Length: 271
Length: 271
Image (cartoon, rainbow over all chains, first blue to last red; front, side, top):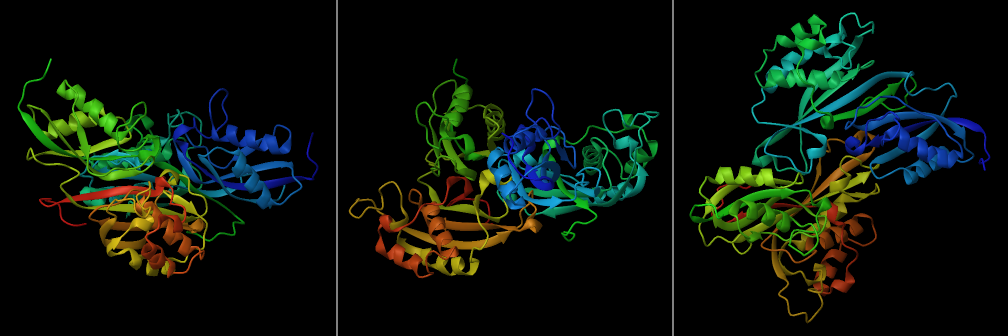
C-alpha cells in the first residue's frame, strides 16, 4: 500500500562511520551507504526510491557532512521524515535533519563546494581513535608539510593526484579543479593520552569538486614530504607533471571524513 | 619447549577499546582483556602465565592508561617484550611499552592513585565518536554540574555511589575513598561538526581507589543535576545518605576511560 501524500523533494543531512561500508555508492551484494538509505526510504515510501548523495566516498571513508536528495510521497513534516530515517538506518549512520527543497534540487550537481578533513595521528599507538586516523611514526616535519600544502591551492590540473585512471595523460577526463582552502592544524585529541607522546593533525581541504582519491593522494604526498622522503618543492613538481604515476601511495581511507557540502542557498554560515 | 631465560617481572602499559570486551577480568567463555593478554603471554612464555591488571574495568569500558604486571622467563629486552605482545594481541588492544621492575611489583596493590575520564557528547547525533561517549540531549547546565562536583572531592564514604551491593548499609565493605581531583572541561571534538550544535564534555576524576561503578554513578548523578532533575545540593545529600538506593542510573559504560595509574616510583610527571 502506497502511503498517501503529495510527491515532495527533501534534502537529508547525514553522517556515517565508513568502517563497515563498501563505500557510499550502491553496489550489488555489498553494504553501502546509498543501499542502506534506499532500503530505509523504500520502507517509508512503500516503493523503490532513488537517493542521490552529494559526495562519493570510498570504502572505509567517513562522513559527518554528507547530503542526500530524494523525492517521495510524504504527508508528514520534514522533521518526522528525519526521525523516521534515523530510526530505520543502522547504528553507523546518523541523520542530522531533513528539509523540504525545490523539486529541482540535486544534492550532487547543485553543490558549490565540498570540504574534506583528514586526520593523522603521530606517535604512540592510538586505540580509541584508531578507526578514524592514519597512524604514523613520530617525526613528521609539520612546517615542511605546511609549506608544501600551498602548491595544491588555486585552480589547477590535479591529474597527478587523481586515482582510477583519471590521471593518465590522454584519459580524456577534465582534471581541473579549484581548491579554495587547504591547511593543517594540530587539534586536541580526546580519548588518547597525548602526554605519552603523540599529536593529532587535521588537514582541511575545500574545492569546487574532487577527483577520485584526490584528497588521499594529496595527503600521501604531504606526509612523504613530512617524513623527509621528498623535498618541499616536490609537491609543485608532482602537480605540474600531471602524471599520476609519479605520485606515491595514497593515504589510507580511514583518516578521511567528508566534512561539509555547501549550496548556493545554504542558510548555514561558514564554520 | 620452555624458552631459556631468567625469571623476570615486567610492568606493561596498555590500552584497549572496551566495546567488544566483557570487561577486563578473565571469565570463562567470554572475551576479556586479561584473557587476551594471558593468551599472548602464554605463547611467549610457553606456559600459562598470570597477568595482573591495575584497574578493573567493566564490560564496555575503555583504557588508555591500564597497567599490567607479569612474571615470566624472558631472555630479550623489555622493548622486545612490548613489541611481541603488541604483535600477538588483537587490534583493539595496544601495548605502549614494557619495563622491567622489581619482582615484588604488583600492578594493582602498588598503585597510588588512578584517574578515570568520562566523555559526554551533548547535541546532534555523534557518529565517529559514538563508541566512546555518552550522548545526551542539549541543555546541560554545566555550571550546576561543576558546582555539584565539589561534593565528591576529599576523603569520604562513597557507599551511595558504589555498585554491586557494596553500597548497601551493613555490607561490611570499606567504602571510604579519597578523591583528589574532579573537574569538568569542554574539549575539542575532532571528527564531529560541533558547528552543527554540540559539545564534548570531559570529566576527570582521580582517587586512591574506586569502588565498583563509582565513576559511572557519580557522572550519572551529575548529569541528572545538569538536566535540572535534581538541585545542586542533591550531590552532597546523596553522598551523606551512604545509601546506593537513593542514587539514579549509572552513566553508560562506553563513555568511561581508565586514563592513568600512578605509582610511587613513577618516572612520568603529572599531566
